Amino acid sequence: MAELDAEAGVVPGRTCGSCVACCGIMNFDASGFRKEAGVMCSHCSGSGCTIHETRPVTCRTFFCLWRRVGSMPEEMRPDRIGVMFSIEENPSPRNPFERAFVIARAVNSIADFDRPEVRGALNVFIEKGDLPVWLSFGQERRLLHPRPELRDAILSSAVPPEPLQAETVSWKRRLGLLA
Ligand code: SF4
Ligand code: SF4
Image (cartoon, rainbow, N blue to C red; front, side):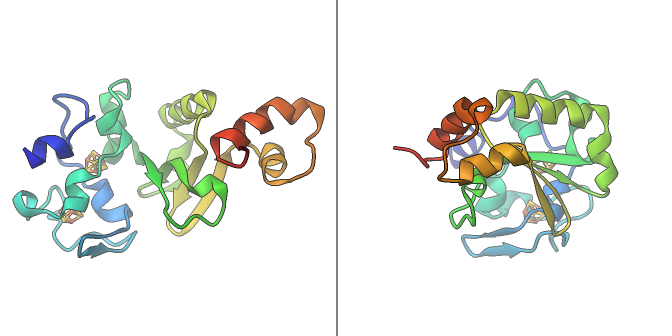
């Protein structure tokens, strides 16, 4: 039953297969299990988890967006496309854009952000617009959405320029910066 609950919201029938992207690029630090970002987990065989049956709850409950969004095609499995998308929350955000966000992490090369399929997925998340969108590679992280001038308006207490007003208010509401 615990396994079924852990897998709530994933695409039926879709499995990780030989992908181990999250076992390398993610930082896992919860419930007594710790693994640094960018360091392949010591339990990874290279094509799977050697402790799959007893893997930590952090791993049981983490699913990238390819596992959660059925409209992301098979070829966008993170090890195939080179980019892993996920939705994450940060309990200790340094700014409002880090509280809940979409993040695209390049697995091996920043050039994979330029793949048409990756650009297409990024555009979908940007057009949907509900959450900030980050790009990450190694230790580097860059906010892609909202765009810089809108970001500045959101963080400012000044009245934004007229063309940005509606978007600014909408973002401030979503980010909890307005009552
Ligand atoms: S990155 Fe996604 S598909 Fe790959 S192992 Fe992790 S959850 Fe599975
Ligand atoms: S314990 Fe297994 S599933 Fe979790 S990060 Fe390590 S190899 Fe991946």
